[in-house]
Image (cartoon, rainbow over all chains, first blue to last red):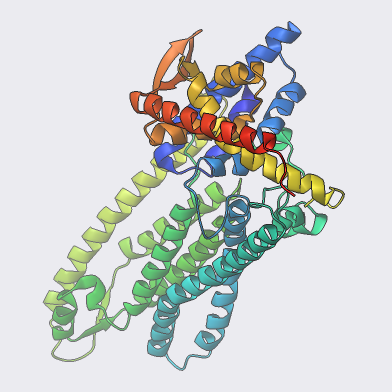
Length: 359
Length: 119
């Protein structure tokens, strides 16, 4: 039963959410009936290996799922799972190389303004780079597909099956297995376990990509703030300028730590693209939340946010502004700490044995 | 690609697959004049000498349903929820037409085979 659920979970990874539950429920009913039938023949429940044999005969999860997907004309059903896997495998490398290539000129940027503009440019140039990456991978697979079909037609065959596909055959070799990071022969016994019902579901690949893109945009926005303060405080920026004040050193500390935090999160989001079980993810995400709270604490407990820079500075207005800002930061800090405590409780609840929770 | 396979056998297998593809749809539609769920349908077809892989049959059922040739219903049987399929009125019409076409093709092939070879 556990093995069947693990198998269905593996198939579900490749199905769209609109049909996933329905397809899996039907597959469960059919496979369970087959398992029951076999158990009745043998007069005893099936062993794990006997169940695995039934699942093995039913087919590899990604190929089974692919038969439930709409027909694709550019890349056929035999090749599509490998095409999809290639996109997922190569994307983190593309992002890593892109980050490296763009980081070098940023390090040598002459001033903070140039640095901010350089980073914003890098973020926005990422979108055409990703489109180009998708185009080339798709083009290579489409060409391989077309060549194979023309060859099959020249041999008088109507098409190519999974067994006759040169790429899928290559994926089963030792080198192909290493390249695509999947076993050369599929074994149901190695399927990952099904998470408990009350644990959060892992994020799908498109969701992880969207999160990465949104994080890049957010990163670019934050980097622009020192040059364009109105991006965060709106008309308040012009009001502060009228008070003849400059930023206190606390903002520089805050900004440097914030950039370090965002960079750390960026690396985590790139690593998360790999998918699969990532036990490091929850503790590291929680660590970033603690860092965020510490960052807010720096602002909440600061005494000075602005320094008067001229004889015309309105000290009373500066004091009033500082008081309201301090109150605002303290309230935000309180909310962040409460949210952090709730999340810490959720994590500990999942990891604490039930007999400890009962008392 | 299996390097040890005989090209003639591979060609035959591909042609057989192509020939079976259309026949399978007729067989599934004909069998679903009586209600079945996926597994029992596969067993019923196998009992009649038409073995079909589950990974081919189950998606085919959904496709035929999308095309309006089958209707389906989730129902509990033996304390388990199962999706039962049966031929829709549109499917019955299509099956009649397909059987007529199949019989006509069969007759034509027999006539060709029985015709004395012209030299």
